[in-house]
Length: 366
Ligand SMILES: Cc1cc2nc3c(=O)[nH]c(=O)nc-3n(C[C@H](O)[C@H](O)[C@H](O)COP(=O)(O)OP(=O)(O)OC[C@H]3O[C@@H](n4cnc5c(N)ncnc54)[C@H](O)[C@@H]3O)c2cc1C
Image (cartoon, rainbow, N blue to C red; front, side):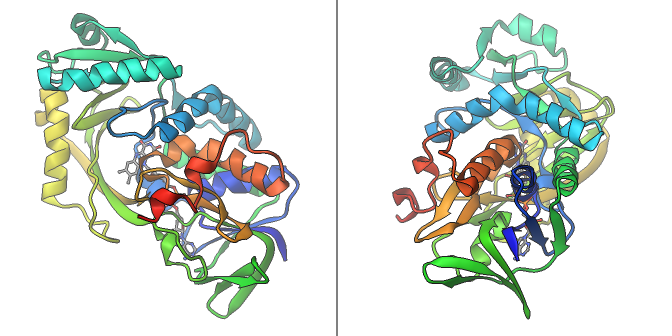
């Protein structure tokens, strides 16, 4: 019997395990494979603390902006807890308009996000090219976001796992098939013949969260992302256009991302997918066309019908907390999600209005 059972040891489950163990609760995390081996490993580690209003709902921008206030402190705390460095760089990011058609969206991004409190400034094309000489010289406009950052998402996920273990959490291999219910509450979970009992269950099984029996209404669909890397260092910081982005990985490699595809639970790389990644990246930097290919990968993001995560108690089962559906932002939102889940479990008032993220919200029912 545990105080809390967590289904899934991706970055969300691992971060929740850390915060809940720190709160003095006995925590058991069940994953059918090694921790952190799915989407949390496929991510590119981009931490953008704002978003384009035409593609990112306001309630998501709220979570992103709040994350900017404490992400660096979480990295510090985690490094201290595990005694290892997690590579985190806060060198800002550039957002580029590649032609006149991209300019209205760039302008709207600047105005809306600045009004909401994000650090974002218009810079000249010359300034952008000075900051990043390998950018396409034909760019039509640029924004600079000085607080935006990058983190080694694989190291971060493993650091959450390690910190949770050091705080007492147990990670166990188990393929969870169902959540068990009784008397309007969850009583535990089932994995084949095995039953695990707990006072609380947290569902954080990423793109697979909708497959677990006994949890009605969790509408999660896998959204494949393909990405690849090339040898060499071309940029100092992450650069974006509306059609692609480029991410420096240390001093030796450069990552190019990423598709968003609805192809079920298929994690293969395809020529069409990698071709569209190339198209977006080469528009940002034609120099990459002759770079040396290093490797490709794909992962399944947990998508929701309205692109907002599910964070909160399951409808009618107050001790089943849903923490999934983070789509393109699970690395960015892991710390804030873990804080909110801890608050819900220990009975504190959550630090923000959780209604937009409720697993029972109206926008999920259409
Ligand atoms: C190409 C790509 C680029 C991305 N880039 C970024 C980025 O730059 N920044 C960002 O913030 N986000 C990014 N993301 C999104 C981010 O990766 C996800 O939002 C995040 O990793 C989701 O974490 P998770 O813990 O919910 O899921 P996962 O990491 O997928 O973990 C789910 C875990 O649940 C386990 N599981 C599933 N079913 C069961 C079961 N029945 N029983 C037991 N265990 C189970 C799985 O084995 C897995 O370990 C990217 C994603 C992709 C694919």
